[in-house]
Image (cartoon, rainbow, N blue to C red; front, side, top):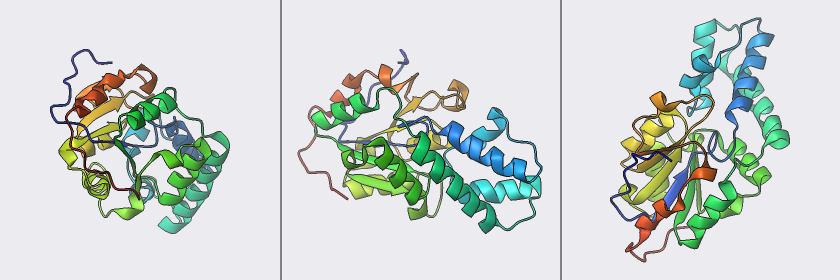
Length: 237
């Protein structure tokens, strides 16, 4: 844990997780899918640094930009659909929970806090992944990229998750890994924990109030800012 972290100032009533790179180490799967499709078009793949700007965004943003950047010959729908099939298959065969996920979810539940996912991925991916991981039933609310107009780094997805939970944004704690995801959560007014990944180093997540190497290293007493919280029920969805 980042020793310089500032504890939440407001009572924590809900915790909102990004999915990719947080609940599972899926960014290498997405990176692999992108590069396989680029290779089929005779293009060089993206390096880790080149891939970072696409983390935490929608597939619409990713492929619209890649079509422009590489002057790809097919329409957006072609790449979107091929990427969709590739990622779904990788989620079904390769999804494994990140270290510490089960323990952290249990700790949050034991405190009676609301739980949500706010992922820029499309709903079919998120539902497939959470089901494969065996944790879908842990979450009150699942918000996905096809439910919002603006993708991360815009805070819309986090504000929607808070609204669906029935909890003010300032009473939510967000757990992210991507640069744009951290920006979105901080912009929504949430206390934000950044989980390190192969792709997003500290320089990309410096605006988070806390940084950790892994959920397995998270001191769950950070959720004890929930002491004194109101007893209003979190909505289920």
